[in-house]
Image (cartoon, rainbow, N blue to C red; front, side, top):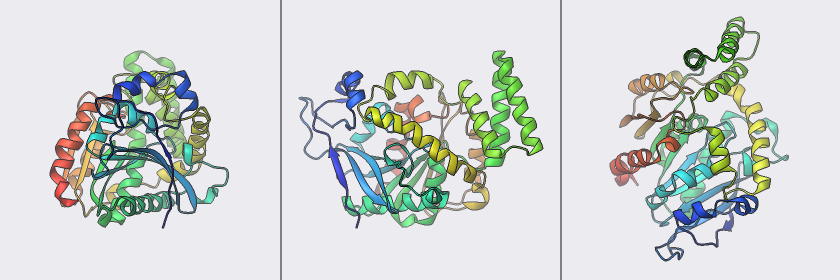
Length: 365
C-alpha cells in the first residue's frame, strides 16, 4: 500500500481571495493548494486541499488535490508536455470544477515536483508513464474509497491517459481527452502546414523561411522527427496555436510566477524537469498512432478540442473519434479556444465536463 505524505493548506481563502493572494511573497514561498471555504472564509469541513507525495513505481511523485467534498467524484488530470504540469493554471482557471469533483493534478515522473536526480533515466519511457498513471489511479481509489474515478489527459497527458484507459478500464467511469493527439506522423505535417500558413498570413518572413527549412529537413530524414516536431511547435506556439485569448508570456507573469502553488525552487525545478522529460520521452512520441494502437475503449470516451488548435490538428482527432469503438463517445468543440482549450474557455470547459460528462456517467460511479 502506498502511504502519502501530505502538505496541507492551512490558510483560508475563496477563489477571489486566491487571486488577491497571488503575488510576490506567495509566489516565492508557495507550495500551498488554495483551500475551499464558505462565505465567511472558513475552510469547509468536508473539503480537501493539499499536496500529497506517494511512492509510485519506485519513485516519489507528487499530486495536488483540491475538492469541496471528499465524497465527490475524483478527476485525475494528466498534464501535457511531456514534463510540463499545469497545476497553477488548473487551480487558477478551473478552480470552480472543485465544487463538483475532487481534482487531482498529478505531476508525473520527471516533471517539476516529481523530478529528481535519483530517477533512473531508463525508467523515463511511455510504457512506464502509463503504468504510473494506472498505479496513481489505484492509489486514489484506495485512499478515497471509490469504486471508479474519472481520467482526463491534456495533449501529451492524453496519449498516456487513453492508453491507461485502454489497459485498465475497470478503474474508470469515463475517459476525457483534451486536445487528444492521435497520429504523430500526420500531425508533424499538419502542424507544419498550419504554422506556415499562419506565418505567411502575418507576414512573418523569418518564421516562414525557418518552417520551410524544417520541411526540407523532414523530407531528407537527416534530423529525428521528434526534434523537427518540437522546432515546429515552438513556431506554432509563437504564432498563436496554443492560446487564442492570451499568450504564454502573459500566463507566465500573471498566473504561473505569482502562483502560491509552487515555491521559487519549484519554478526552477519546473524548467529542469521539462528538459529532462522532453529528452527522454519525446522520441517515443514518434511511435504513437492511436488509429492502430487504440482502436477501441471499453468505457465512455469524451473528447474536447479547441477549434483554433494549431498544435494538435482537431480534424485529425475528430476523424479518429469517428472510427473509435466505445460504449459511448462524444467529440465537442470549444469554438474560440486553441490548444489550451480548458484555459482559453474555462466556463465552457466546465459546462462540457459537468453538464455532459458527469451528467451522463454519474451512475457508473
